[in-house]
Length: 453
Image (cartoon, rainbow, N blue to C red; front, side):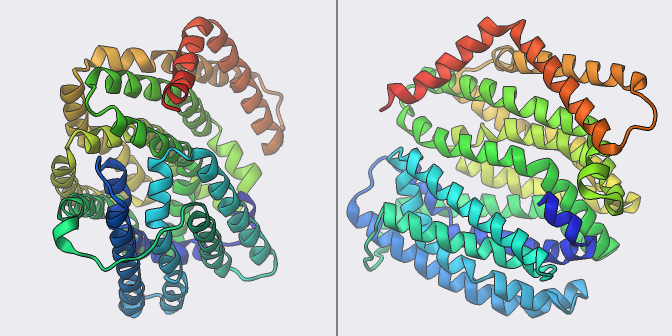
């Protein structure tokens, strides 16, 4: 992404960002909440699996047709004549996504994470190679469109190969409980989609393609590394949490261990990126992306908060909180629409800052639910995060304090290298000072997997 950003323009990213607004919703509709419902459902027969596989393919086919039908109106709404072709080309990946919804969910339910890691690694490699190659060859925004489609088709082939599933005629009488759960998840995720994309909708409509390109890239750089980590942890944690649904003490321990380990990785990355944002943008992306600096700083902090809070999502689902998730997401979507529309008057930085100031309050119901269901106190939760918070604070202070003594005339790249080196060394030293606590946390994390093999 960084290399491609140097080859493309903000308008290229902005056009694809417009397409992603619709494609993100269609991706949720394609999954239909079936994956999570399958993982969380305690009694699933082969008959259920075959029927759900058929439902997934039917839904995927319908979403492809829906996306193609919506492409032209979307282009007219955003006043972007090239947008319809981009949307229709990208919609082809939903056919492949539908085919792997059930196989992927079963691989997770069966704890076959080694195979899933191989699938995701191959998918990422194919998409990255295609994106870079197409950008170098001068395909402009098509490099951002075609590459994820290719990666999706490869991932589907490997998922189906790893966990083949048959097809059977769906019977609502046998699927009613599963589909009820998936419907609630779908409504909640649809509201979540609106809440998380209303900023892009407003920016695209009010500020234009270039501003959306700046915002999209800032969001991608801030979120992608941390979201990959979060997705992995949530993918692994959901089946373990489902397996311990009858033992709330074990579930509480699992949440604390996962949150603690996640924070050790996420907090320094997010804080470090916020501190070195200016040097990073100039050295890695180039001067044409200087408008990304301030939004990147804000969105990096926001990404860290989202990663930690995301660990609660499987807990809420497994403990029966899908209805709460649905209603809270609907309220949040409406509230954020008004907040972000007002914030757009201050440009892209205003939208980013509005997210950071509002998001922590929006997540309070999920903390309330998880703490109540697991018998968890705020002090216990903060204690799990404390080692990462302390080490990250020491790292941030060291990098900021040493900044004035750098030699004058340093290039952006050398400035970035020095900042990263000082931050990494300081964080390592601060972590060594509390190594006994971190080693205990690591052993507990490793024991989770061994205990359930």
